[in-house]
Length: 257
Image (cartoon, rainbow, N blue to C red; front, side, top):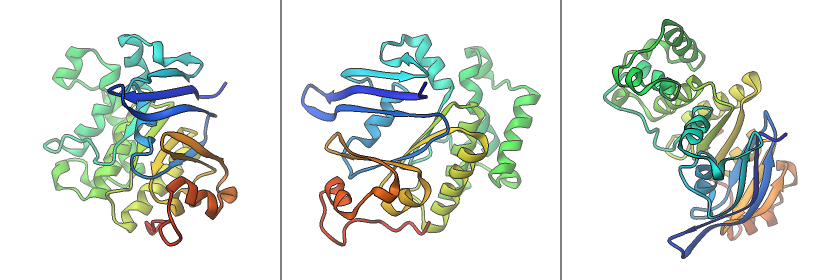
């Protein structure tokens, strides 16, 4: 059974703007998939439909065989517990420390009262420090997040996501705001997490060269429709032109990865 399956999914905003049109694909456990396409192509909408930050207009989305488009509030909460989300602009609480932000990854597993008072078990704290060590952040654990670089903030976002014990990690332009060196660090970490922890990863990327280097599979979206789905070695220049509706010299953004 696929981890994730889209079946003829469409999304229309305000009954006017078509963000996705008849999108169908499936993702197997342990895959590392990059979704590429120009701004406004529907990449972010696609990811946000998975954890119900956006509701699909038509079609079905199966997560471990369950149609999440029909999920009630309790089921949506369960979906989000096991679906990590990494954002372009980090989505951290800047006034809190790294370790506090990472522990927030456990809030979906707690009662409202325990979350409100910030009660975390010793096991959860040990797990948080173990993850910080994996991401090279142990020495900064008590530093406020507003004191961090962009690359460090994104590593905190990854650590917070791992605290959820996710089945699936969704990454919405995770390196778009980073310099080339930091972008490489983030992509290396995500690739390592995928390989060593067998966590399925789906990333939205603008950088075609990065997608081709790190991914075993690339999905290309244009105007809300999938126009390519396959391995990077079969992604031709003509197909990239079609995805980006671009001319020669406008294709690949070098992120230094």
